[in-house]
Image (tube, rainbow, N blue to C red; front, top):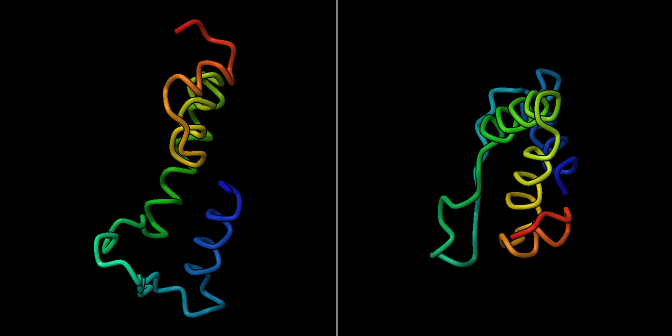
Length: 84
């Protein structure tokens, strides 16, 4: 999921495709209005996670599982074999 979101953000910001980064998000549920992170946010998150992955791989895995996987704390601890 992470890679799909990052690739979509790169395509949206590509100069070849007009790359001004202005995308319009349309939702069918008004409660979700503005809930989706923009392409710039995803690219910044990708850069931060890449850097964190070099420094602290376990913490990067926790952030990925929480943000991209939507896992709860207990599920992440089970997934990564961390005592809760």
